[in-house]
Length: 586
Image 1 (tube, rainbow, N blue to C red):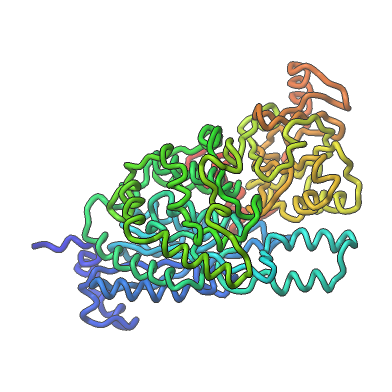
Image 2 (cartoon, one colour; image 1 turned 90 degrees about the horizontal axis):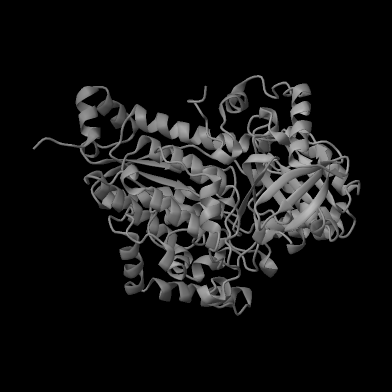
């Protein structure tokens, strides 16, 4: 019988392949086994990736147990947190594209029969999911888990608040240093529902990771066992038909993921990543898709930054399966998953296999460790006791953002759900944060940071400015921050990002002037310019003013003349489309 494995066909075509692999340490008997590509973001770059070598080795063990051979490949990701406040953060979103590109290169240069993809964090996970869909060999995702909370349940997203309070003279350096020294007690993704945690949850919700495997504590023995199981499953998938990622992931899978996103109050950066992941298989996910599914959706997860508890308690409360059980009537339960079973079948199997009992045992251990008395329902609320009933994000539109802008309304003060504000535009974050910290921004202002979109400067996070505003007792409830850049998944407050089209592309955000009146209405999904120099005008008059301003507007000179960021700024799609490299645009 002819061997259908592509790795074996490659051996016939390339006589150099066998000796080169033997020189790498393969044994002769390994050459004829199913060959499994193990991609990870392991490296000493940050806590989210520093421990992934252990998961790589566990996956290799599982592959060997199932009769395959695993080959390790690496594309280390960067850390947004380490780059905050520097030009290094400009590389963050572009790194997602480069990770996907490296996966395409590594796997396509020497094809494998199946893959295990291991990552934890903000761009590593979406980059891996984009890459695995692009190369489209049978694949399993292993997520790297979450770090433990520090003393007094301290977590990293609180550092922005500590820093802003120190800058304002409210705390001394000793207190700031204590927070710095204790916020990251070990490896794993930051322990809140930021982008890293959100994307781990999305990998499971899309059906690409094993059921119950997302966002475990990084040091958990359960996580190592999931990695071994993923290795065994990859070998099985190598022999299967109809189990490529493009066979599994459908529009219904994405709708499930977005409903889970609403239930966990996921990061706004997910509106960049899910559309880019879907784009790899020709599906279109838009801001309208998110807005439609979030409307009326129950928000169940009481975890930081919008809630009370560190993310390590997510798994103890039942993780993604418990969230899915809570919103089960709204999910497409017949979607296929990487297990070869439907989502509904996986959920039933977890209940029979004692998954929730194991989670409860870990919860009791965590309560003992932290001297707390947290229950499962404290962390994941029942459907009829939801924290909110309208999802967690809204996509706003109007003459200021014709393609849309996004706000995480679960993290926004109710006072800012509807307001008319005075425009204060800044052409960089550095100018804006200086004005905020030195009280040159006043209540009632709409603060703009523009030319920070993908084409402008790579679409960095406006984290420190958002933290400076949200931690200010007066400004945090009386102004809005609007940008064509993005925010950290940890950001809170009245912050609106992804304003599209962006300023560098000539979007209306580039035309805003001091004294324009800005109308914000979260419930009505409105973001628009309604006046000039403090005076209300009709929509037609506003259109005339903007058209006249556009005649005199010119894009800024390209910030980057070469390298990755020049490529990214030249080709990136708009923020609300996912900011992927758009090779098809005219």
